[in-house]
Image: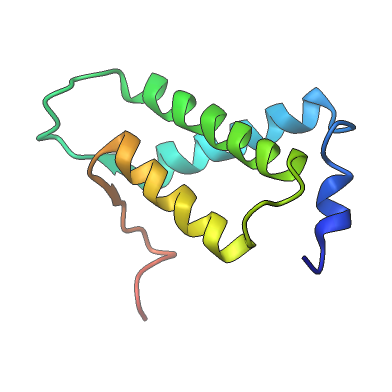
Length: 102
């Protein structure tokens, strides 16, 4: 992997503060840009669900780095996307001005 050594620097030496910041960024993005399908029969608190997903995502990324990148980044990204879709069910990206075509 071309940039693997840089990611590995994040491995065991990664400060908890960085992990928390990354997790909070993911939570904020999810809360702002994702919408859980209202037809979901498993009515849960969306805030808790987004936090659960963000912490899980950060854990998977750190595990991937710690295991010396057992998958190529593109494959790993696809697997993460499938995992998120599986765990969250149907999610929609909220359309905002920054995403709309001009």
